[in-house]
Image (tube, rainbow, N blue to C red):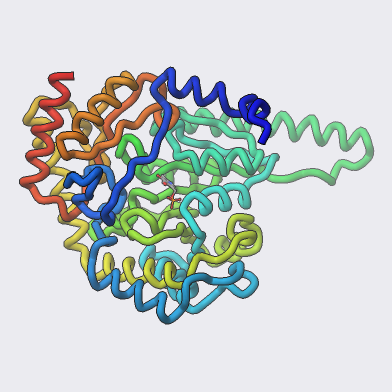
Length: 414
Ligand SMILES: Cc1ncc(COP(=O)(O)O)c(C=O)c1O
């Protein structure tokens, strides 16, 4: 290998990350995902998992996945549109549609691929996308891939969103006018006309802040301006609403036109999905490149995701248990004098600011047996480093009370 050439590509970036405390390393965990894990031989309370309902750890669900492997083997062997589509994929999609209250659904191998593949299929370079400034990286990557013109609006600021749509429409009208003038000069006035196409896209639960998108207001704006609305329910499915159906259930309102979700967080399997009208899903099956040009998820994974979703459907009390834990933990943190936002999701940010300090606090807590990761730039803005606690339905009040006390103590000493 030519090390000098590799240095040209990699050395500066790695050195800069080391210098500004954003260098990343993998943590070694030697036990399965659960509310407690083993790190370097030590029992540690895990306040960092997206497995919000702790389903990765339910015996009957583990058994169901093992049985599915025995029935369906270890891999799918082909893309969904070639030979990879097996009964569990179809059953999973049917159930997702039912669970989400939509006409149809399509499964992707990851939530990342669902976002990237949906946005880049729906939009192209003549379209306009309106994106919340705190949207997840997979949304941002989908927008980049689409080459559409993107307006980033201030976080959850609906007035800024409306301003952005109006600006985009004015820009579009000006462009159309000059394009049709050019065409009519060329004696070809009818060609080239296409309608204004806009897409609002937002996380349902913002992954690093835990706050919620204002779905009722987004629906109103989308309707008023004639644009499409897409929400990403990665951290909402299994968490929000009485039965964990997500943001629309939480607000008791209509659904977005396009609902994306993941099967890897509260559902505790792997994969992503889009739910919506039959026409939308048929379109994605035909046009979404991250659906078409990849091997289908293993049928056993689809079967596990289905079984886990059915479990959520049958156990709304588990969703309630999670909500109860979030309230208990936030109250405990406040009792110790910490400022935490009012949150209805399972994500609780404790803002530190400085990257190095956030890292030190997280490391000290880990040594004390509490794992809460320090989230730093570029995942959040520079100087906005934070501890990101996320809870599970199975944490006990005792361990949450103890963790809150330890967090407050370490913070006061650092
Ligand atoms: C808001 C959001 N969307 C999408 C994803 C991607 O989902 P997946 O992990 O299934 O790829 C994540 C996290 O990973 C996320 O936080």
